[in-house]
Amino acid sequence: MYVCVCNGVTDRDIRKAVGNGVRTFKQLQQATEVATCCGKCAGCAREVMDEALQADRKPVWSLQLQPI
Image (cartoon, rainbow, N blue to C red):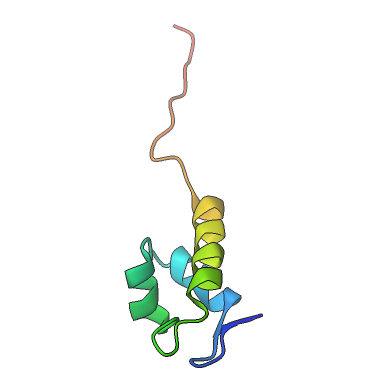
C-alpha cells in the first residue's frame, strides 16, 4: 500500500528500511523521503514504522541455563 503518494513510498519500503536498521522517524525520512513533501502521510508512516519495529525486535542476548 502506498503510504506517501508524493514520494512513492510504500509500507513495504518502510518495513525494509526498519529491517536495514532504521530506528527513528528522522532516519526513516532520510532513508525513504517519506513525509518530506506535504507531510500528510506522517501519521500513517509512523504507525507502519512502529509496527515494523515491534516485529523486528530481537533479543539482545539470551540466557540458556544448563544443569551442572
